[in-house]
Image (cartoon, one colour):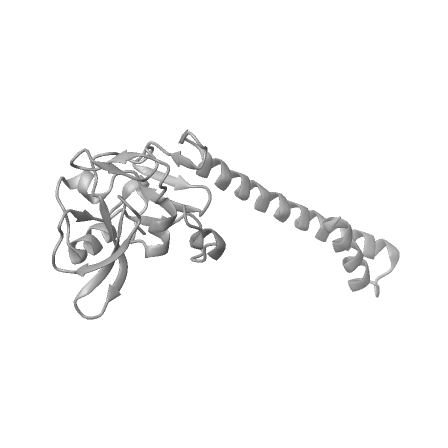
Amino acid sequence: MLLLNYIDVARAKFSFLDAHQRDTMIKKYSYFFFISLISVLFLSLSFSSEALRGKHSADKRYVDHEDGTITDSRTDLMWTKEDSYADLGKCLDWNASWNYARGLSKGGYTNWRMPTVRELETIYEKSKINKDYFGDTTHSDPIFASGGAYSYWSSETAGSCCARYVYFTNGEVKEGFRDTCRYKGVRAVRHLTNGNNINDEILSEKN
């Protein structure tokens, strides 16, 4: 249908030519249009294939790419499988968490960052069980590595002293001093696509 519409437009555009010249030009431009369309479809399918390759969570929502990264198919966010606590074996304050996330190259990507509160809330799932560094229960999909922090810093600051973080024991959002860690860490995130917009309806859902 799209190609037929394109041909109609082309006919109108080259109406000043005689029939033979017009048909030649339409064939030429239709060929280039078709090749461009195939290229776009190929890139889209390649991207989808890459995003879905790997081990899936029990509910098929998450994909473990087995390179230290996990994709959430609901939000098109990619997360690190290990948080900073599981990776380093220690807590990090907000400033150290910022530097840690920015310095990562997990999966070959270098655009990792700290998540927002709403992004963190999308992976807090009360019905799911994971274990923190102390062996206590946290609520995220077990596809994420165990042995991590029980609360995560967000990128959001609060005044000149503090920043917001999310407890993964109960989903509460708190504020804490940026220069203290108290068993906190960061789970770095990146956008799977070039865009920075995520469906607000998905981000606002409570698990």
